[in-house]
Length: 215
Image (cartoon, rainbow, N blue to C red; front, side):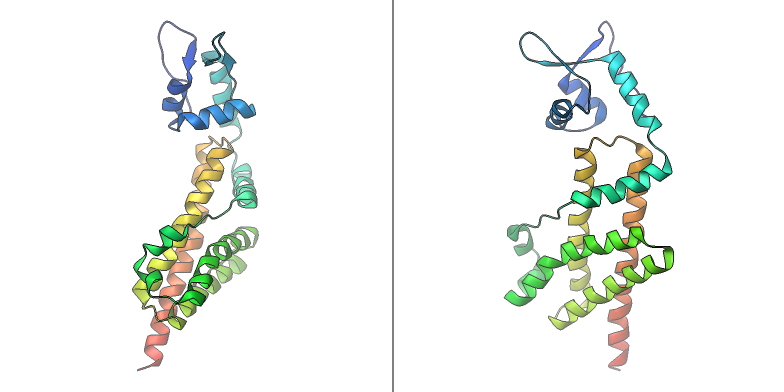
């Protein structure tokens, strides 16, 4: 539950105090205030100040918007403008990536967006179709890894690298949109875990099936 910060002897809070209260970077508070997501005022010197009463009303409005239906829609909305940014430097530090040729690296670099598209399908479909989509993604990651000489551990590390990138992108989109509902965040996390856990299980099962077939 969001409660306004407790500060004695003043109705006004600084930008850094509000950032500490919400647990975000001060630049995020500045961005929300500039966009009108968070009520703020300017002193004669141009500094931002936040009124306690207005923050209290803002917090109540955030709690009021935390229905399950809205939480589900927030995930879909976030995916609409989420971009999975993978730097070449981050990839180059991965041991599994160093084993790949240029063609294979290109395939893996594109797999982050494919993973996002798979999550979108998973969320938009009923349980049976969504599970099938997750299993198909796991099979694709397994066959991609085997085709380019990765063992099951290396293929798992590759998938986890892109899973974490997608998770960071979703978290960033929620923070950028000033979504403060705890229920909305929890719903997003549950859906992300349900999808990526199924993908990972399918990846490992596919490797196991290939290994058993060779015996």
